[in-house]
Amino acid sequence: MIDPAIKQELSGYRQSIDNIDAALVHMLAERFRCTQAVGVLKAKYDLPPADPAREEYQIERLRRLAKDAQLDPDFAEKFLNFIIKEVIRHHEAIAAEHSGNTQQTA
Image (cartoon, rainbow, N blue to C red; front, side):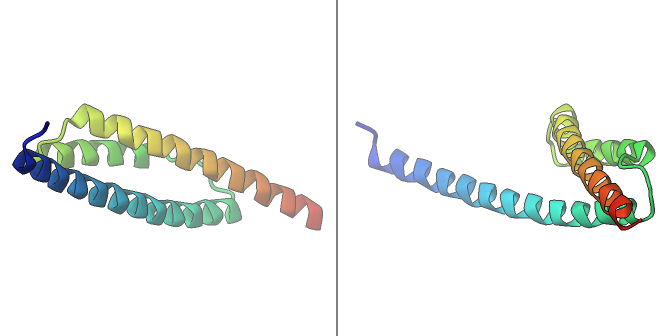
């Protein structure tokens, strides 16, 4: 049997974790809404789906932020790389769709 005080403390921490997880999901959804718009803009002007210089800058920036926040910079970089790969995949799909629409109207 768990001590009721410990159970209450644990429950409080878990509620905070649940709230943070919900906020993360909403923040990621908003981020992907913005990157989808970037993908459309890139497709419209025939820009490449990936921007290695921007990606490098963002990774360096995120590593600094992580270090300042006392979060493992390697973890932060892995997380951002995962997001970047997904964004590029979306941009490639948008570009392919835009290319298909252009060919159909030509």
